[in-house]
Amino acid sequence: MYRKFQNIKKIGLVFVFSVALFSCEKNVEEEVTDPLKEAEETSCDPNISFSQNINPILVANCIECHGGSQAPNLSTFSGVNANASRVKSAVVSRRMPQGGSLSNAEIEQISCWVENGALNN
Figure 1 (cartoon, helix red, strand yellow):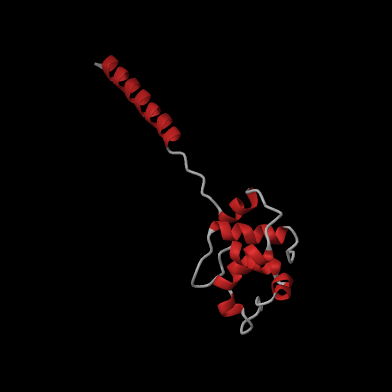
Figure 2: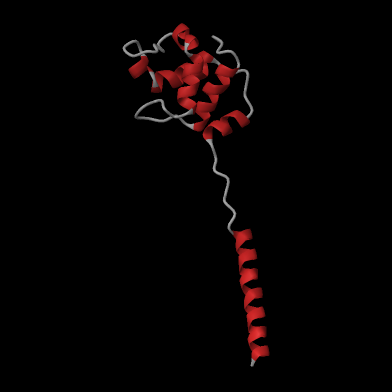
């Protein structure tokens, strides 16, 4: 009887160990995507144009509040250029636009444009 108990105990330990081992393989956390990290990892097009790409995004999403009544004023290129890093930070962190949102592509364009010197092109 004692020998049977020892065998059952060994089988039970092997079973518990096997379950624990295989559950570790199946319980792997998926990597959480970070919009900021994704924006930095994507290739940046140096030919993004302020007039063709960036200004339409700002007009559609930012000018309602930042057209002169609230700082920073983003209604002119000089206002946008003077606050380019601030704009990038606000859209990448998704603090802005309040009450709306930009697509990942729009955020990437703004980020890339700022990284390339925020040119009036």
